[in-house]
Length: 121
Image (cartoon, rainbow, N blue to C red; front, side, top):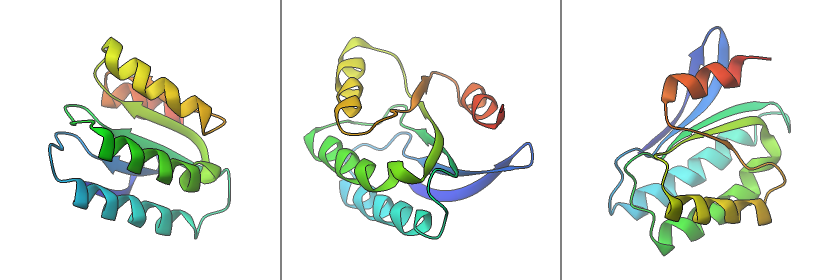
C-alpha cells in the first residue's frame, strides 16, 4: 500500500493505492496516517483524491481504520473517487460511509475512468 501525489492531465491527485492488500493492516493504518499528514498542508476542499481498493480484503479492522481516517481526511477533498470491484456486500459496506462523511467518493471499476472524472471540471 502507498499514499502519494500523482499528476494526471496537469492536475495533482492524492493517490491511495491499497489494491491487492490482504492482511497487512498495520501498513494500511500507517499509510492512512500519512494521508492525513499530507492533507493537513493543503487548503480544505481543495484536494482531488483517488483510492484504489480493488482486490483488497475489507475486514472489520480495515473498515474501522478507513472510517476513522475518512472523518479526518474528507474535509480536504474537493472530489474523491474510489476504484473497487462491484459486488453487493461491498456496496452495503461502502454505503455506510455516507453516514459519517457528507460526500462519499464516487465509485468506479476502472482506474483510468476515475482519473478522468476527477480532473474533469
